[in-house]
Image (cartoon, rainbow, N blue to C red; front, side, top):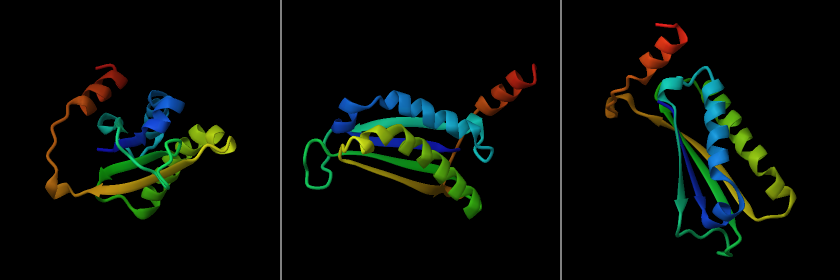
Length: 133
């Protein structure tokens, strides 16, 4: 049940294609063995009202929250975080190189299994497609 939640402000909305970032993050998540493809959800939210640093309008931010099912060891979580943060930093490198004020962040949160309810047939449908059933 990996959820990739992208938050960003209007400075970023004007400068970068968040739909492209969403695609790149989702593709990377699909390549990580520890993340079941049928459970991946990647979504982005524009923070229409946000202040960054000294409040200058050109200050941008992108913050990723990665919510994953409880039970993965620290090394796996570290790998997930580093790979997804690598996508984000690669995606924004031209901004950093160009001196555009930008703050990036990523946080991994465990979803406690006793406090989540799910119903999902996507896992089986993907399996059926893959195995020709």
